Length: 230
Image (tube, rainbow, N blue to C red):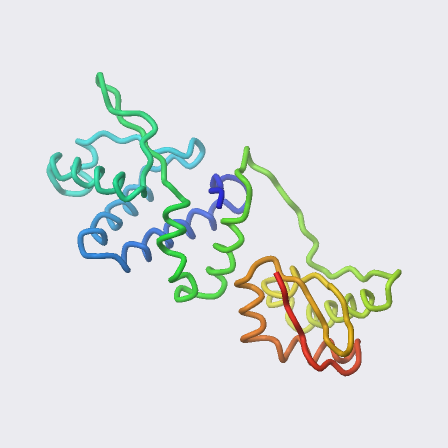
């Protein structure tokens, strides 16, 4: 997994999702780790430089924010470094303030088993975010979620019409779950689609396969089974 820098048009959502992941990672840890993560969430919310992807704050300021002494601050920072939640970029020497970076890879790893407990939309976003390459700067991507129908292949045309029907039924739901599905083939009454991730594939099969199969049957004819691969 490659961590993404939280800049660009969806930066706010990415930041809140990362903070949520930090919180649930802490809540499912031991008491000492819970306290460390709670303090870190407060610190990141108040002082993290998202543009530079780094945190620079002195021990005295940390002690004041956390309402502890500086010895406790040193122990907390060491614990976060030892657990690889933070990465030290520059040590605090010769009067310079130390600089740290959030280790998104480790935060994702520690929180992943609890994503779905937060909600399926959160889990889907997190599963997508961790597959994105490193961002080099703000990038605006405009996506037209209105389905486009192919005209050269009857089966693809049938899938295009299926997408139009699904989008007309519930545009937001279609955008969240069905818009990323890619038609693979339709053979022997089995419709095969490809999902962008294992989570999306499993979630649709578990919760929304009947809706998908019913709508697709109106375009393809009898469908015995819908298979979603990834």
